[in-house]
Amino acid sequence: MTPAFRNHLDVELSVADRVIVAVDILSRTRPPLGRLAVGKPVEALLAALPRLFSLCATAHQVALLSAVEAARGEQAGALTRHRRIKALISERLAELLRGLLLAPAVARSAVPLAQPLLQAVNALQRPTDRDLPFRVATLSQIKTGLEALGIDLTTEFVLPGTPLAMIMMAAEKVANGEGWRHMPSAHGVLSAADDHAVVTRLMDDGAAFAEAPDIDGRVPETGLWARRTARVTSPQAGPVDRLAAKVAEIATLLRWIEAGEAEDESADADVLASYALGPRRGAAAVECARGRLHHVVELDADGAIQRFEFLAPTEWNFHARGPVVNSLTGAVLRDDGDRDAIHAMIGAFDPCVGYRLSVREMADA
Image (cartoon, rainbow, N blue to C red; front, side):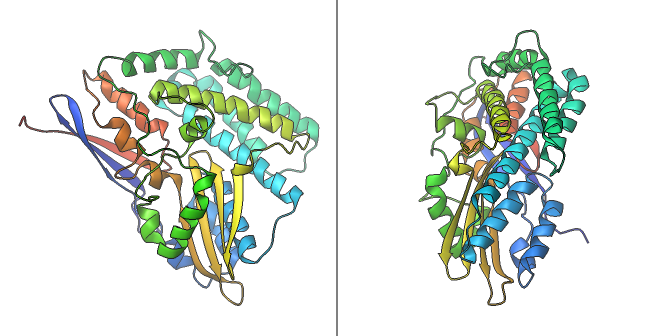
């Protein structure tokens, strides 16, 4: 039976005198996992997550496992944690690449490169007992594909004359014209420092908080740009800037994966965190491709699920008062090319579900 939930976003722009004066987002209806999980063994929910979340399935599984361990008063060993972080980083790389390669403009110019590159990344994600030479060969294939696409893995720049360079030029043309604003986030970025506040609210208020989250009234941005601005102060946040940030992160992740093959333990500690919230209660936070994912769980006396809640990055970025609304409100539309810039800006936030864009022209006051 298909779950009865609306798995897409509706984004409506209200335009007056060519200015976007309002942005209304009708969010998706989240799957009722909290209700469906009650009384189920942890293993059953763990097995169901990849079927319910085709994107970032590994992140959801790692978050659930880590939250359950915290509820049980357990802590994963160093090797287990390292393997989980490697799996998370590999999935983040794959999701960022899919978002890049499947964007319409890129897809048209990089069809010969996309399929073998994605196949190689998928092979890197799959658990395998194959020997190190196989992994090294797969990494080499990915590096070759990225360089052909236009990513200089050493400098993190886009190489001239490549498919990605042409996409960057097109983005600059539509996004840097007069009237299109590059808006900084009005409410900051979501980070590991916010985990305690988030998981406490998620445990206390459940789905009501997850559907429209905030931190003391703030709706911070999470994801690629939030990770970048946590390290580099930059007021620019337009489609071109976000595309450049994605290129830089892809290069960084690939370098980390290469180091990880030698069991390098230098991974960012914020990639995976877990928290004990009291007897049989635990939480976890995972930094996945689209941002920070939170799970909370409460177990009954027999170890089955008594409560389960999750909060995905899309609920922050596509909040009615969130970063997407902030980024689009006030933009001046000049011609049909600006619609491409709007799609580029929405796509830069990479929602975990599809979206529909509509424009409502308002009568002059």
